[in-house]
Image (spheres, helix red, strand yellow):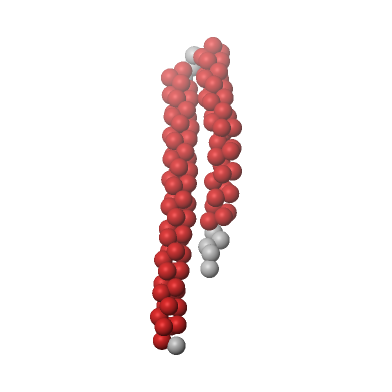
Length: 110
């Protein structure tokens, strides 16, 4: 019986790989937007200036870390899917060899 769980995982992985450039562009645009907001807030008011800059930099770091974690998890998921697929093919060939061997033994006795 072939494992059908790999097909949806492959489709999800390929879909994400297709959508990944858009997400990266969005993150870059979002970071530029945050910088623009920070520069506008610097021009408008000087109260709590350090806190605003610190919060913007923390948010940008959080987005960078989240992007890295997301990217590496996708890479890991892709490698895992291909390894499992290869292992299932290996198991199927080994099972077929055993079946052929048992059939030869059965036909040799009868």
